[in-house]
Length: 320
Length: 303
Image (tube, rainbow over all chains, first blue to last red; front, side):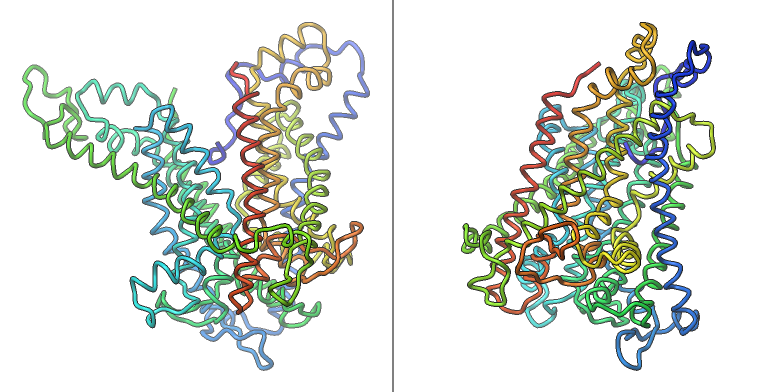
């Protein structure tokens, strides 16, 4: 279970504590060296975020030397790769939020429903069938989902429903819907972990009072697991914000400020991909823009994650 | 509200509305259950439609020519050979980098780290947060450091290093879970018999953690095989190569990038090639997934 901070092994002193309390009979230099090497491997994981921040900061500072912060954050026209470019980030920011919003509308109810079914209703056999299917769904590469959006969802679902001429080949709606499908497994599996962690005694108690299974699921289990469920939503949200290939393939590359999901749009991630594919020379304004947008994206997902950790701490209920 | 049953009405927790159900409530409960099942079935349905759509589009080009031909601007001759070879080069490199590092980090965190020290808590926090960083951001890191600053360009090494950073937390987390599942009594027994901590790790912990680690590592590597966005950015461009990589520093492309390249072309014939490429990619990934699930079901011990 990844959503909850490390809780440790069963109660009692850990091996580390046991080992310290017993006196060593010999110095065991070899053991110390291996421990040092293992520690170094763990420390490497700290180098990655430092590297991420370091790589973002340089280009971002260079960008804001040329472009004002206000112009970047509040401008409504985004044409940074043109000769006389305009650097208002709102069009790609709003596209990101709109597409992620559509995705969450799809994924939140479906993912939670699937989790409730798996944890409260499904028998051992159907769990054995459905959980691997969800894992496969989570493992489908995003480029495949992008292909699915443009070759199936838009022509075979959206066009018959909304009218041939109403919706273009590239549109935000298909990207949002498909990203929604893509994040269902995240919500389903993390919520299911949270729901399954609710002690059986609580269900038994409610059932003994005469409640139906549905009432138990809705009024006992779901409230008790709320923090884990919310954490799964937030993680899915940040995954949606960072999703790239589906947006690049299905939503197009026209940055426009609109809330009409039938229009083509460019998300922040799609812009980063476009700018990087254009092979911008190091230090050019186009190259630096990529880092500025990357920083904004990083801050956005970081904020979402911090909120999620706070929420989990706040609503977390500890049993036993 | 519930029907009166006499005796002790207070016990029935009136605020939550729990209590004995009436007939229509049971019916509503059944409907709710069916709706919940529908949510789950939707996922399965989408997966089925997706696979059907890909096979339907791609089967005309799903043959040996696809794998033996190099990418081409002419759809009839376009293949995926250099991308296949690139994927193999990249994944082997990623495995060589991430498996030793990930397992070592996991062993340290589970068996050695003192949880009260600030640096160990920092490492903990980091690994948790890294799993939520968008993959494009890793791409930017790869572009700035490996591609430009280190001068590796769009090579196998740049791609592999970027992907290694991306999947390392996944390998660490899954290996830690495998180690954590081993009961403390095993460690204590080993220590009590006079084994050192290193001997305990080598002879008790690692062998028992193999199935869980293998499952997690296979899933992490299959994630790396399917990634396109960070590579697109780190390798800086839609690489179109008609030669296979020969060493770590040669230019490379991988399957998802080649598929993306074909999807983006206007001619319908290229869409067929893209779908056929997706069939190859999905075949590889489903095989890996099946292997992971099989290993888990067959070798995982219940203590």
